[in-house]
Image (cartoon, rainbow, N blue to C red; front, side, top):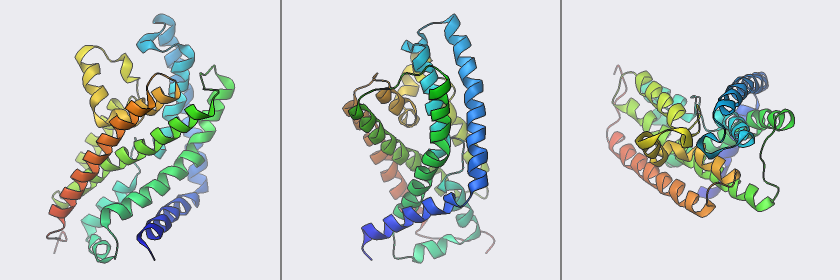
Length: 266
């Protein structure tokens, strides 16, 4: 099997694996919808007091909320990505089996995470977004090109998200318990991606800093492409640069970590 077919099969396997958890998917759709409703009404109250906050009108703010709920599981902003299983395999020593496979460790887990992310986007993210578009005023583009540009930004967001979480997972090679690193990464992801509030709302130097961090590629960048507030090519360059840097850093850290695999406890 060629390398391309191998990783395509891994991605398809990741998609099918999560597709089997139908009850969990339905529960996730319900949860995202409920949290979306809470955030929408919070945003509407805030935008009533501060119209055009962050440069968004009410419809754009509402659209932003439902995009966040659509991306929450797909980009594993709240956890639940490939990093959890990878860290467990490092902890137990099963990672040695992965290293014996005739496949690259990083590309294998990237393919699996992309398959997971695509399913979560389609299975768990689309329905809350459609619900929000039906029952609330939203600002959605009418032209196909904007939607295609948005789709490309989402793919790059998945690459950046995996790059961050792969580095987090590899910390388990040196730590007895990676829970602390995972929690710090989760907090940084939720805050710096714009999941709580659009990064455009953040004032002064804080806003300038968070907008150049890699987490802004996850939600803020695709949202601005969809809302017509960002140049797609400039957005791709920003996301692509972070994707290359993070994946390259993951490659270097993987090389350092796997020179000597030590199974905890033996």
